[in-house]
Image (cartoon, rainbow, N blue to C red; front, side, top):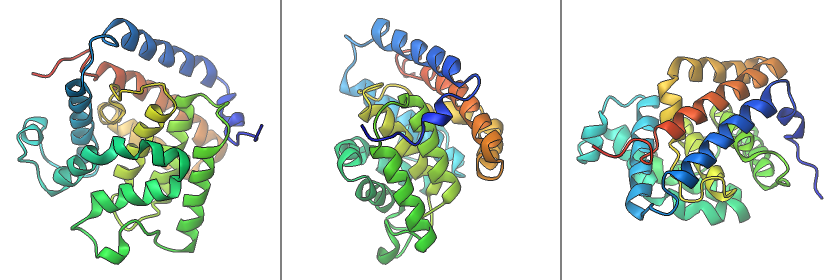
Length: 242
């Protein structure tokens, strides 16, 4: 079996228990609150809520009501466009992760960047960071899905490998990891909303992940467990659409 490069992060103090508790909460929600009652419309609502939250984190000023009505600003429109295609890229993320990442960026940045910049890393260092992310996505699955999602998110967000929309791509990839690992196959958790609810911690812990060595990575993982719990509470299974 191929060694999982994330094993050491999964065993840091407090991480196993924090993620076990968050995973248990998500499993209970999916099993008891809707696994037999979900529909494509429920998934669509989760994706819409996630698109709005991700857009706000990227600088959008649009409200959820405006996004729902198709009246969001340019950033929100970009992210909603991505949300419509995102789940279709789940199989590609498993087999050709670099292509999937390039496609995520190409979709969300279409109209904002010249064609030749869509889906392309900024430079050789960025290309190498993307290859590292691809290795994390295809490594053996001994690391819990939530930990893998958190690290992949932080790697993309802090590397900023593309010329725009890096945070959006990071959060989209995070959601897809939850789907492809089977933890949330119908994409009903809204991790983006969890990050928005904890925005100050989200932004500061990403800086810590980038600059703080092992301590920063540890802090990011502990933060992300809390964010995922908040993302589960933001699910349409918990809070139906108004």
